[in-house]
Image 1: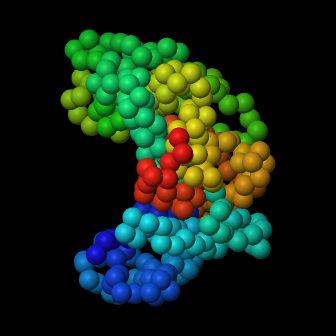
Image 2 (image 1 turned 30 degrees about the horizontal axis):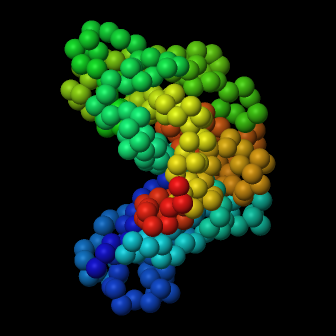
Image 3 (image 1 turned 180 degrees about the vertical axis):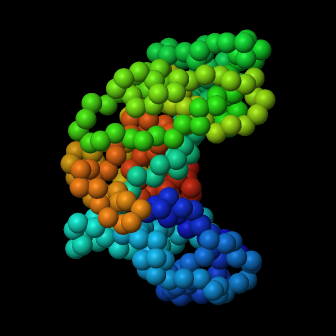
Length: 304
């Protein structure tokens, strides 16, 4: 028996669910919909004391939700719940509705970086400053003792203590370049400069900035934008047709997107969503079904 991986984008939450192998798909869907629980079930469990998805959404003031279930290495089913936008109650979420997936996108960044390793553009333990062109990690006494590698950046062990989260930017405003973000220069809204504050490789400290450095590394080594590289090397080969780093996928690509909402479930009348030029760390627009394709990643289906 295999566990089923439930990818929930509306709240960027990953859950697991297990049911008896003999259950038909309809019962499988019903079990997930009516017995949602954040705990991993023991093998053979058929029922849990959970809550229905719609009831959980109502309690947490979640307007829209989309899920995809992987069973035995295949996409078993996907479904949308609720609405895209609290100001437009007739616009229902379906399996093609795009959500911003925040730090789940770091998985994509890691895969993109490892593709460069596979193509022998960089080694996991190479000094990344020897590969970076547009920007360099500031050297100090800590980097003099040990150089920062791609392996360290991927595993949050590079000695960076920024603890970056990202506020995003209002739509249709001037966006900073990646180098401006890395240097904490206007119009970037991050004010903390990147500083190596521990011996690289000595300890793990969460670093969003580390994934921005990987974003810059990918652009420098590939010669194309991060968005174009991931589209060429990951999204198209895996058939992830509803995944993009476009800032405005609803207008530029005519996709249906889920609007961002406040904690109380209400809209911000001044903006529909944030824009994130910090693509390597903050994540793309995508769907649970496309993320399921990334998880499954069947090489036989790749057309690279």
